[in-house]
Image (cartoon, rainbow, N blue to C red; front, side, top):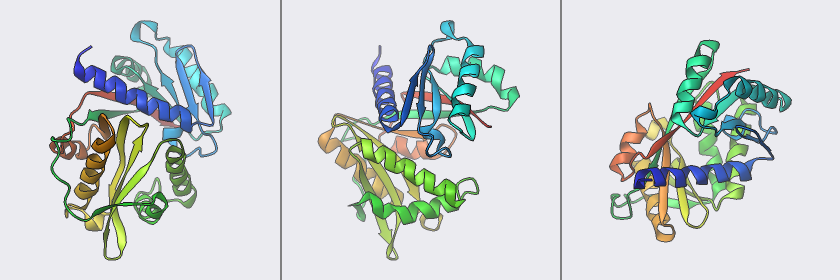
Length: 259
C-alpha cells in the first residue's frame, strides 16, 4: 500500500470510528454496517448504510432491499448509501441514478505536515463549542433545505453528537461583535480532523475562514501525527485547502434519495 492509500485508510477509519460512536444504533450487515441516530432523522450524516463489500461481492438487490428496510424501520425521511470503494459506488450509480438516487463525492485530504501550511493570520481564536451556535443557525438559515427550525435544530444536535464522542476543539473569528467564521477540530489523540468550516457570506473574501482553519491546523500538529480534512469534490474549498498544505488521497462516495 503506498503512502497516499495508507493515509486515506487512516482518515477513513477515523471517520467511521466517529460514525460508530455517535450512533445510537449500529447494525452489522452481510455487506456492511448501518449507522443510525433516528432521534435526529433530518441529519443524513448520522443515518446511513455503509456498503463495505468489494465489487466482486456486491449483491446490489440485497443492498437495496436491506437499506430500504433499515431506513424505513428507523422512520427516516431519506435513503443514503455510503461506499467504501469508488468502483462499487460507480456500479451502484449505474443502476440507481435512473431511479432517483443522487451521487456525491467527498475527497479526503491529509495535510502534508506542520511546515506545509502558511502561518495563520491574526484574529482567529479558540472558543467554546456552544458559542458557535448563533453563527451556525445563521448559516443553516441561508439554505432553504436546512432553514426550517426542526431541521436546523437537528443538524445542530448532530454536531453535538460528534462533539460528545470526539475530543472537540472549536475556532472562530470575531467581527462587528459576533463570530462570522468558524471550524471544528476532532481528535482521538493521534489523528485530528478539521471539519465544519464556514464563513457568513457577508464576511467572505476577507481571510477570516483562512485564519480559523490555519489556526486549527497549527494547533492540531502540536499534538497529533496525522491531520486531515474532507471537502466536496465538486466545490471550490478543496482548491484552497490544497494551497494550505492538504492533498487529496482518495474519495468517499455515496448515493442518496428522498423517501
